Image 1: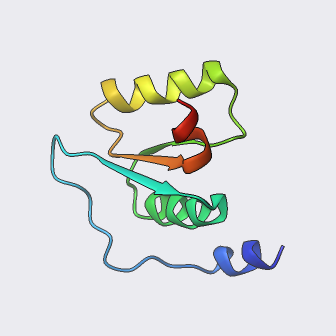
Image 2 (image 1 turned 60 degrees about the horizontal axis):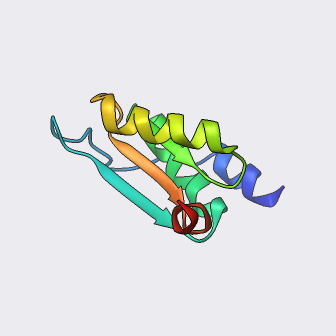
Amino acid sequence: MHLKIQLSSYQPRNLKSPKANSSSVVFSFWTSTLDIVELALKRSSISCERVDGKLNMKKRVSAFQNFRDNKNVAVLLLSLSCGAVG
């Protein structure tokens, strides 16, 4: 709960939209770190997909395909536990 209170007032600084045709993958062992990064991206209007243990396999595949095929999705957020499994 404490993390959510801090995140509600978080304002990202110096995040810029990525260059055209570029993409990034952010790995983290902690999903709370992915929460922070996802919030910063959304507040900066940077589109992303997220894959973590909350998604079933069908939704994971869909997220990976959207990241691969949709040029508007610039960032893939991936928990290490899910990324290691495939």
